[in-house]
Image (cartoon, rainbow, N blue to C red; front, side, top):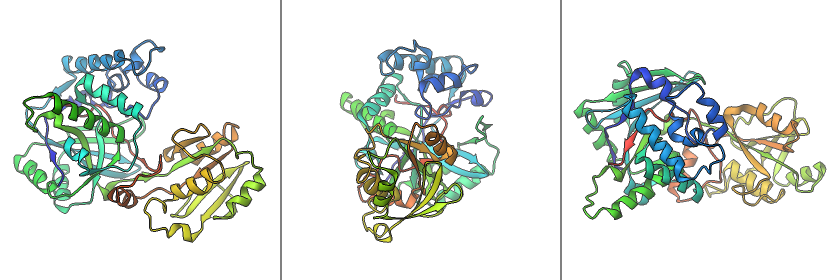
Length: 413
């Protein structure tokens, strides 16, 4: 069963929260982050992407980068911007986007649960990204960006969260992108124990977003366990910062694809090959898939609707029946010769938050030849795949809204 425990968070004082809260490190590249922090010295991007405060020619994986992140984090604490809570608490973190709110519990999950697959994963991680986040955790001695976990809804937890959120939040801010972020502190000891005991009966948590962060937490936590001759199991390094959302609250957006070329085929040859597994219909306007089994395709200034042949959707394998897996296998690989989308330079991925206009822009500019608009993978599909011990194709899910860094910091000792 899953372990979820309270912790003494370092949090921004309410008057500084708006300035501190920042987008996750992996949403912006270094140049974008540098622009984002202009005039914002308290932005947590100075901790999450500290290369922005160094010579632009520095290797982003240089030890100096992580040392700068540690320096920036300690400055926020020493200047009184972040303050440690007086006791271990749970927290509620709510995000509202387009009139829709999701409520998550903030606490610490177990490193051992990560390694024992009580916390289930659905993506492969890349070693370079694992190393990057592991170094960040090691040198800053902290988890400063929460990992996005989910679980199957529990009525008792939902009741407690509803009670807490009927009160005024301690932090209530609207970011520049229009997304509202609110935080409550659960100080009541009875509620804290009720949450711990209830979640102790939940068989599994699932990594929704943050596979590299959770891998880093697992790697560094295990290192600390082995290095401590007096290791007991209750030390802070055995746990990592998470926000735990019930599955019904999650919103997964489409994760779309753009392709550089037709692999030497003419457009007519390409369409002929497509017809083996798809029904193709030209659309009079932008085509955004409305259900599983539909794919939008944009090429030469026109949109087309692709309907996946029903026999492919009936595949009992939870991975093989995914729309993104079918596209990868029968189009990207079989027709276009893109066998590994993780490494191929001929494919790129566009989060649904950017809209179909971004797909058109990438193609119309001549940078890409065609684009595919996907129907979002569901939370249920994600859980079924993780339960089966299988891995999703890369870039299968795009969660919105993104958790903000800097609202909670967990130190490893």
